[in-house]
Length: 99
Image (cartoon, rainbow, N blue to C red; front, side):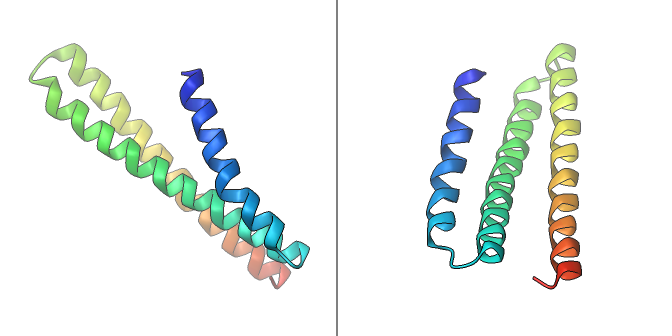
């Protein structure tokens, strides 16, 4: 689990760092960081949905595996909702601040 977390953090740093360095203003930097975070979130949600599908396909009627697949489905739905809310919040705050 820690390896996955370290890999995700390194991926986020690799995606965000060039954007932060090349920004001319603080607003531009914030926008680029937000865009990179959303892209990482999109990738994570897509991976969650694929893993959930594989879990359902590999359950093959086993109640334990089916239960794990259902939990993964609810987590994928929650992750998707969180990303949608985050994108909406970024858009709302950016509009309110005139960015």
